Image (cartoon, rainbow, N blue to C red):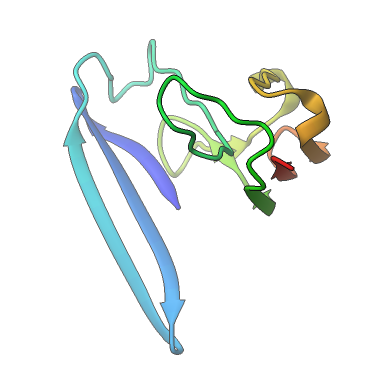
Length: 118
């Protein structure tokens, strides 16, 4: 998965994967007023989440998501100057009770997350 800003006011996402042994790549570009190609003022959030019904958070509905792994994460203003995503570029925030979230943290660019709403 590669997220980038191809030009001021636009964001893009390219996803590459395999289906039945065949490599597949899809890209989307969407308007995003305020985003800059230079990276100035842009804020990126890496999120692992479970959707809930609007205005209702049910921490006991039995839903779960297991072992979402974020790895080999890089950040930079272009593909040539990107660097590994480091701890100093990461802010820890959890909006659910911590008793419902498991994080196997390696460093700012790698962790495995699980959420259990039991």
